[in-house]
Amino acid sequence: MALGLNTNTNAEIFPHIRYDARAGRLFRNDREQQPDGKWESKNTDITSPAPLMLMDLAQIEVGWIAFTGGAPDFHMVRFGEPLPQQPSKEHRQGFRIRVYAPKLLGGLREFSATARVVIAAMDALHNQFEAAPESGQRLLPLVMLAGTTPVVSKGPQGQTTNYAPIFQINKWLPRPDDMPLGAVPRIAAPASAAPQATAPVAAAPARHVPAPVAAPPPEMAMHDTEF
Image 1 (spheres, one colour):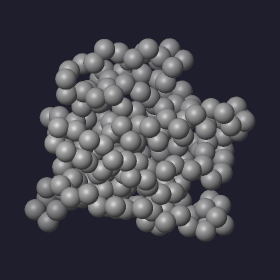
Image 2: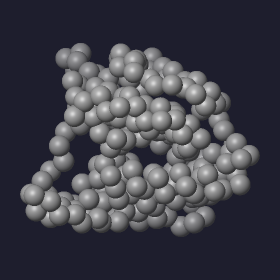
Image 3: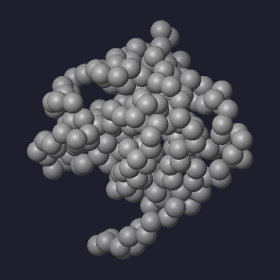
Image 4: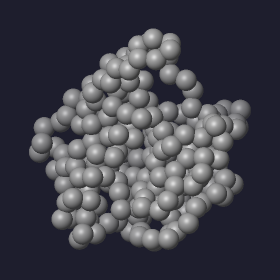
């Protein structure tokens, strides 16, 4: 692989999705122009019905991520390469992966996270990917967020509950042209949109909202056009 470390923090910010582990919800982030001409980020909850998307697990990146200064700062390497040193105390270990869903996401987006429950879920999914014979055939998994499971932890501030995502591989599909192997593709913003920027992620409410996702009937997940 030998892709090296990407430390270009001024690179284009891609459209993305994010998972709120404290609420167990998945959001699509979009930039929308307001009547006064300013651009603002809008988070759309896409948790239900259970979302389906292709995940480029063959090109997942790992490293350090910090959400400071209004945009994420990534110091990542391709999976399998030695991790770089932690750039600062604000940087936390995490992953970054390309996801694709023409209807649900409008095409290609990024998904990154530093929450431990999300990392653990992605780690389990990646193990399934590596063990599957389809991965050797260069097929990509169509992944469903099939539900959530509560994870209770204790700390100095008392007991907290996070909700780990349950990722499920529903089927395998050929790699689309929008997700090429090799160099990470540049993602152009829609013609009607301003250059993509990522606003700081607002803190979740103090209360913990259980949000299990009901999985749809198996036959629904098998229709490619549903994602």
